[in-house]
Length: 322
Image (spheres, rainbow, N blue to C red):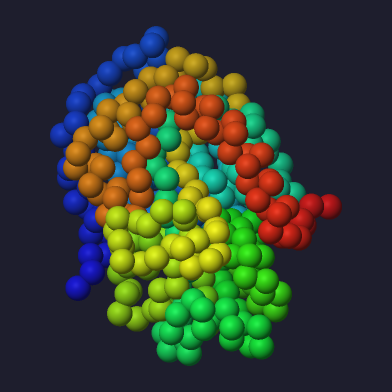
């Protein structure tokens, strides 16, 4: 039996519950509860990662850290909430490649991704292409061949989100033009639709797919390297379809957030990620812990936005901006 994500989260929270006490770093300290706004539904890998980090931050900052799920509009709802929040360090966004690097290139949004303050990277996330139970194609080669004459459908976590972009990259490299896109409000709803047979395919985090290996079909990891959680599953690139689509998860703050606040929070996140047990739990989620400094994450964040813009244009995703 596979371990469900909520069980992984519970174990992870216990692992970090004893970390540190209140801390005062770089001239800033939390004076009220801190909230982390998550752009996706509860239960997905990003949500679990946020709750893992929230427990450690609460202990080290000396204030409760509350996770709020605000799914919708491919992450724009949550992003807007944080973008206009007071820039005092007490409101953070669980930023992702979906919400900050991809969605603004596809949809009309009110926030400027480049104006957020990058705080701390948490992890990179590997996704994989999976098929619904009973889908006739047993492997990727057959799936591609069938897709040329059969109109399959695929679900995603939203227009402009990672699953949509990565699937579009795959369809472009495979020269498949007749597949129907069905967007949902998050990874978990999209995957539930797949398991229920409402869509034929989707791209989801490796850890989520791994729990249902005996029910869904695995076609390949959307990365240039295999994932250690499923080392026997080949990448799409190995099979002739070079999709380089490892998104990221990290904390970002409203524009204008003081450097002292960002630095203090980054230190606490880095300390949590340095713990072997935390790294283990993230890897069980199919994530690779991000161990870089705040400066390194800021530089990475700066380059990520234009990178996804190029990938989206190359994949031919239709822009919905008006």
